[in-house]
Image (cartoon, rainbow, N blue to C red; front, side, top):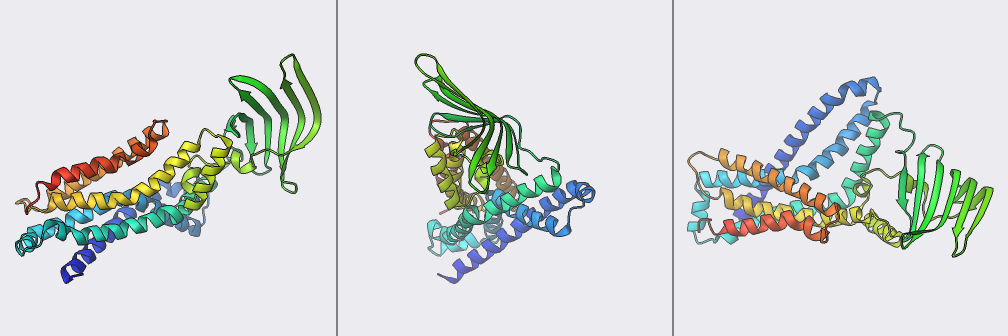
Length: 357
């Protein structure tokens, strides 16, 4: 690696780190100002606030990576172009592709770190943010949302009117088996509680209806211990549960949901696709950023930086839309998730024809 390569990588990473820190600090200050009254009213300990801000900062780092990479690349490249350094490099016989190498190497380093953060660090931070909000910002929610529906098998569906976290107790529980649009059996009870000692569910005042070809079989009882393919955690999952799982845990959860035939398994699959897709964004946006700012302009680097912000926001918007389409049940979810990278990669290849040689 030549001295120039090391210099470019050093400046790229240093600028990226500076932009990341500044944007995160600005957002954290605004977030703290907005929630400060709530912190005082709920007497939130300072150490918990600092922990929350650290976790939220990690979350913001992942969210802002496309912007920060793009801005860092454009700032460095436009500054080199303004000092005619790029012209000197290309005039010395170095090809544009060769000049791209240190930029892409730095982007690959950022992408690798981003993959590690997304797979193993960020899920814990996301869980910490959710826990903090429930504990201090949404106090008083002792139970889950009402009317819980869970698919627990290929043909089995569970329903609970409400589940209380503190006692692992639910009310008005039903478990239905439906095949070919017809009800085969229905188990219902007024109360259901998780027995932590036996790892079984205890039903109180239960009724079991089994429909047969001629008539039905009806059984009732006061108490019944039964094993179901669900646990209290299944009734207490946050909306962003797929975002709080480390990569190995996410793969295991997908397998569990696939075995159950659960409808929400697509959210977990898409989250896994996103974690493998995101690191490549740094490479693609770096490629476009160098191309856009390689020319020397009379107005300086302000226009390129503004365009960098615009394109980075377009990328994030496209990413959000494509993920929404994937979660809505498109036929090719992996293609929808990769759509922003595909679109920007093709854009970069088109722009590549306009760069100085």
